[in-house]
Length: 598
Image (cartoon, one colour):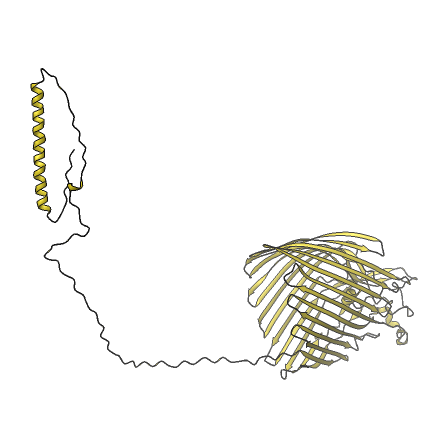
């Protein structure tokens, strides 16, 4: 097999003709050889026979068969021209600019005078019913990390409730001091306080209207309370031990009553990836005694210890916050030799459906609440010093609601709950056993005792807050409660409806004020008459609902000195807050406040 290569060189036409001539000679030679072989075979076919000979020679090209192509062939073209180098130059012509930029001037910002802050202030006011209001607050910066302060407050009135024949004055004086220290890794706080209160059991029923003033003068209705407290807390940063707080409180009164209460609450936290594990403890020890019972010379003592441990897990992920826990309490009643164990759920969940606009929340919680004589007299100062004191067992408080912000200045909260309480404390009138001028001032059927009942409460709550600016804020809230009692006929002295409206405003830079309006619905109480010569009778008392309107205005004379006026119960409704206990009418008070630094 033969192959012919055609290679272009600079003399390609001459090379091509020579190559073709040589090829023709080769074809002629091969053709002649074939004819010669055929003739030999014909001549010798009869004598020698035929043989076939195949000559095969593969094509093995060599370098000499073709000319190499140069990588850059030389061109021999008459039209080829040489490129010329082009030289560029810029011909600049100066242009005179007539533009003159206007000089900028920074906009002036109206500067407000910074508010001068003072560490101390004193306030004093006087009003009708010979009322006095005094306050003094002072703070001392001991060092960059240590501060000390104290707060003194006095509120009193010489009384004058319409239609009252017994002494009805009151006063409340307290002094609190604190010391705080903020170190690099921990902070400390120490609190100490004293309080002296004076009240009178002036709420006599209609049976005393027939007595002369001389006979009534033999009744001493005065009661005074003296209490003191000492407490403190330690908070540690970057530690599984988070905080511990402790408090000691002592209370005594004019009738040799005494109470000692000690609480301790350590808190621990263990963060694990996205989960926060909390371990809290709650220890509450209460011991107290009353000199005697109501119209009985039998002393009353109580000695209670509640110790609880509360583990919980908190998970936060974007819009979801979930808390799961349990509270286990051990309750010891030494006086009655009783030991009880309590277990409560602690579940809380909230989910942001629409950012801060709509948040859904709910949960169920239980608790063992330690009732004290101090708490009872704070809620109702007309209780008798002859109470039965025991804890309230809240089996569960199941709740759910919606909250959020309609705008940056408007917030709301809607909540529904169902509470199941065992041994819920209710205030009720002590029984009336006839006029006994020789008895104590609270033993005239004019004081209150505490009764306990198992109560289920359905509660609906709504709240709306508006904060337009520092110049105006408004709040509206309302609560509806429905009670179901196990033993008592009514949930004594608990209203079904409560509502309030409050506002704070700045009329001008110097003139400011605020107002509040409270409504409390009807309440029930029980008047029990147990006289030896008659049959014991019980009569339910309905206390009308009431509205209490309050207003205060102030004027800043300068950054140190301001004057104010306050008005209370402006509707002049001498309502009964408790059975047979009317309140003062319109109360007005004026005074001044002075701020200063030592």
